Amino acid sequence: RTVAVGPHGTHLPVSTRAELGVDHIACGEADSATVGAVRALLAGADASVLPGAAAPHNLLESPESRPRPFPNLRLEELAFPAYDLVPTADYTAEVISGGLPLPGPCGMVLAARGCTYGCTFCHLPFGTKMRNQPLDRVVCEIEAQQAAGLEFVFFLDYVFGINRVFYSELCARLEGRGVGWVGQTRAEVVLKSDVAAWARAGCQGMWLGAESPAIADTGVHKRVSEAQIEEAVLKLRDAGITPFAFVLLGLPQDQACVSGRLVDWAAKLPAWFGINQLYLRPGTALYDELAPRYNGGVLPATWREVQEVTRRYRAAYPIDLDQQQQRLIELPNYLGNAIAPVAG
Image (cartoon, rainbow, N blue to C red; front, side):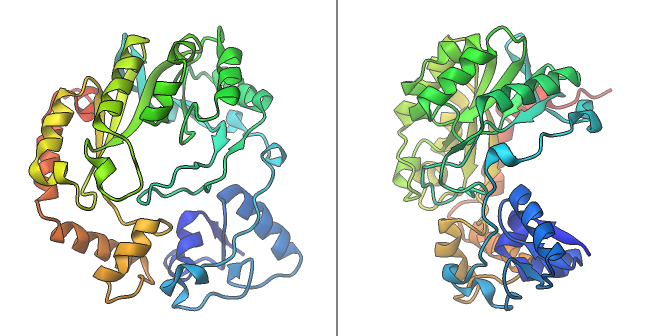
C-alpha cells in the first residue's frame, strides 16, 4: 500500500489522495506521520486518512474540522540521515564567495523546529512551538555533510537566534569547523543578537523576512518597522555577513506595494533580495480569512480551487503585481541577477 505524507495531504487530504492516486494520506509532520502511518497500518488500520476515519469531501469548510495529525516524535528519536546515500553535490543554493552570492552545492540543517511568531500569511509545517534538536546531533549532521563533500549548509530554522542560549552554544560549537553557512531570521532577532559570534561560527549570509517596508500596517501580525529592517541589514553587513531580504508582493492593504514605493525601497536596500507574490496557503490564518471570499463563501476542497482563489486574489489587487515584480527583477540587487547562469 502507498502512503503520502506532508503539508499538502495534511491540509487537503481528500484532494491530495485523489491527485496522487495513493491508498492513504498520513497527517502531521512528514517524518512523524511516516512512522505513525507505518505503525498504524501494521496494526491493521485501513482508513484512507490516517490517523482517524476517512475524511469527508467538505473536510475543510471550517478549520475545526481539519484532521487530527499524528503526534510529533521526540527529535532525538528520529533516525540519523543517511547522507552517504544522497548525491549531495546535486543540491544547490546560494553560497557565498568573496562576499558575493553564487549557486553552489549546499546542505541543509534544521537545528530547531517551529516559530512562536504569529504572521498570518506564513505556513508553519512545524507548528508554533519551538523544539530544539540536541546540539550534539546538530553538530554530527553538519560533520556528516562535510564528510560527504559539502563546504556550505543552509540553516532552515525559521528564526535563527530566537533562543539566545541555544544558538549561542551552537555557534560556539561551530567555531573552527571550517563550514560556511546561511540562515534565516527576523530583524528584531538580529538587533538583539551578537551577530559577530554568528560570523565567527561560519555564518556568511543571513536572510531576513523583510516582506515590505509597510508590513507593520498590513494587518498580518508582523510588527516590524522599516527602520528595524534597515538597521538589521546594516548590522549584518558590518559584521561581515551578507544580508538577504525576502520581499513579498501583494500583502493585504500594503500601501508601499500599491504606491510602488516598495520598488524604490528595495532598490536602496543594502542587501540582496528575493521575490515572491503572496499565495493564499492552506494552513494559514490569512487563508482561512480570505479564501472563502474568492470561493463562493467556503474554503476550497481541491488544490485546483486553492490555485483559483490565489489567482482571483491577485487579479483583484489594486495594482498589476506581475508588472511590479518585473520592475523588481530589473534591479541590480535582485538575487536572481547574481546567481543566474552565465549564457554561453
